[in-house]
Image (tube, rainbow, N blue to C red; front, side, top):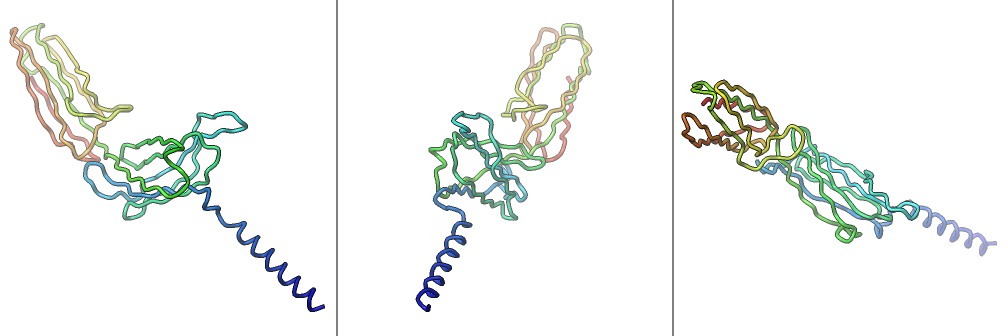
Length: 221
């Protein structure tokens, strides 16, 4: 009787052990990504930045190019984050970093690069600002007056963003306002060429563009 009771105890302990361990994540199939998020211009750590891990996967033997979100975390007070996903039939990975009043960032990785294990990936995102450029011909001479103006430094890409494409106009009376989104905490370089009485004169000016604010520059010619 004691023999069978002892066997039952051993069997019960074995079943309990298997149940407990089956609830644990299989670290042999886990991809852990950790790191830090900072302000790319002011070089300060960023808390409450959202980091999302995405995957495109092979489903029912067919490659699906659409990315699905697998895990999302926000950075702590020191700008640190850590997230973990379980590897599956992945075809590619993507990590996005977003924060209010910052330009978001998208980073694509191959499955060969993000293998099972722990990876440290640090990101720097840039603050946003607005630049308002008021242009006006205040000393018009003739209808042949000409101006061309543009931003010469690197600009972000996206909706409503500043760019380096020149704006041109010929005429005695001209007034225009350009308001666009740009990197904050940087120097904005404005260049322009004015032609009056058949004489062309180049100009340029450098204006500090404060982060999270609108900077106004009046270009009178």
